[in-house]
Length: 60
Image (tube, rainbow, N blue to C red; front, side, top):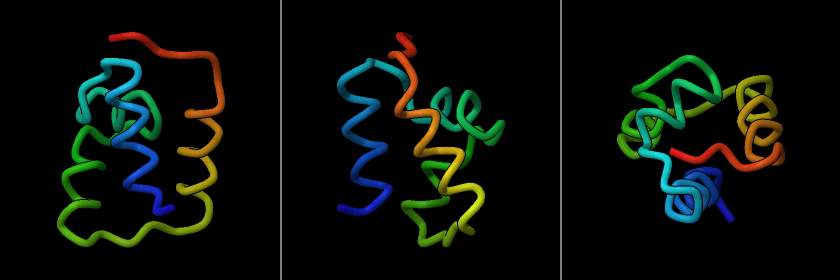
């Protein structure tokens, strides 16, 4: 499963808007938009995002 699919699922389940997810996870409100446009992430950012999603839920 791609990281973008995981992020989309996380946002739907928690009610967190994509821009807020990016801001909370990696301080980048354009993260999800950029991923949808084809942005490729490095290993460190990917790990930060995965760790963020593994934490207790961040409700909107």
